[in-house]
Amino acid sequence: MGWFKKKTKIPPKVINDESIVNDYINERDYLHLASFVTSGKDYYAREKARKALIAAGADAVPAIALEMESARHAWRGGVTDLALALLSIGDPKGVPVLKSLLDDGSFDATAGLSGDVKKFIGQYPDLQPPTPTATCLLCQNSFPLNETELYGDSLGREWRLCKSCWPKRSEWLSKISKEERFLRPYAYRTGGWSGLAK
Image 1: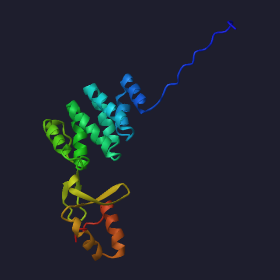
Image 2 (image 1 turned 30 degrees about the vertical axis):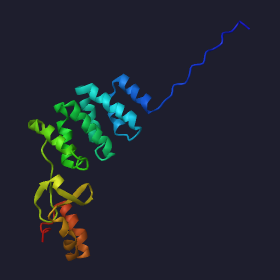
Image 3 (image 1 turned 180 degrees about the horizontal axis):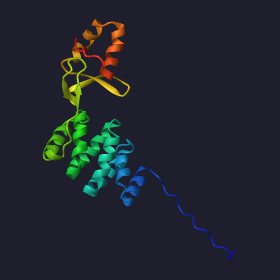
Image 4 (image 1 turned 180 degrees about the vertical axis):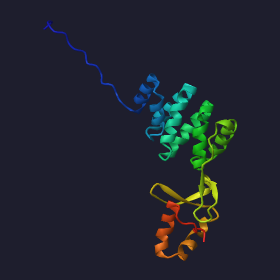
């Protein structure tokens, strides 16, 4: 019986969220760590990934910014966690993405975060991208994007109304015929109708 060696059993590696995060930390894979934070998976693993990004400092900022841009309309909690990580790191390379998400209204639901973001980006006015604007469908005035409401969209073009015209939308719609209800937004999209505010 001594002519063969007994093989020792190697225990299988347990793969769970925390072990995945540990692998990303060891590999310094900041993009996957940032995407794990926005994934909505296990809270403790997400928190560990967020803390690892903060510990990485300025090296992780480009990956965090890229993930925040791509996850802009995904789970808001993850984007908020990444914004808090950027604020903790304090690197000015995060200003453009924070400013664009602030203008988009992404931080409005989180108490205090929009104020902290405004204070942080206010320290770097030369790094801020221009505020996006939108033209109101009814009054034809230009407003910052976060001061308008989305009325509809088609063919890649959004129709927006300013906050003062928003309550008038049903009144305006009831005055026009069914054909014009189709033609006016179509003409607005193509730029062929000049009398929208009538």
